[in-house]
Image 1 (cartoon, helix red, strand yellow):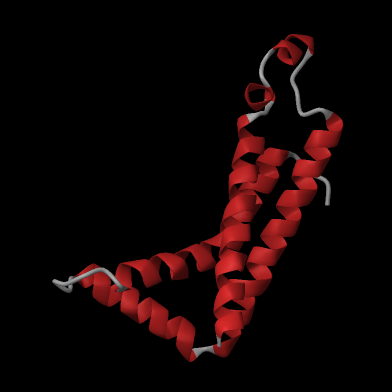
Image 2 (image 1 turned 135 degrees about the horizontal axis):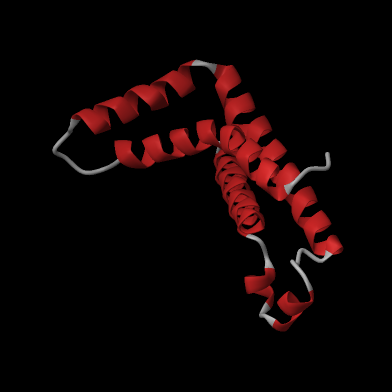
Length: 126
């Protein structure tokens, strides 16, 4: 898939949202007392995911894999194409030359990789 990094950055958000929601709910659920409405809601989200097997495979596996693949392809294309705005940009450090959308794609790709690592460790431990 070829596209603008801005479009890819926007496309990766819904791909990552379910997994980020679940991981955040896991963290909030384990917060120490006193239990609040936020902790109770986080527990409900975790139970909803756990009660449905398809959520674990699709929302915590397939969607982050799609986001990781899409992000890697986009970053490789940007790197191959130069990812810079013009001749003056070549004088700047490499991190400054990248467009903000490319940096967002890189961050989303790292997040999807981290989510997949956490899921893989959990699967291997069970």
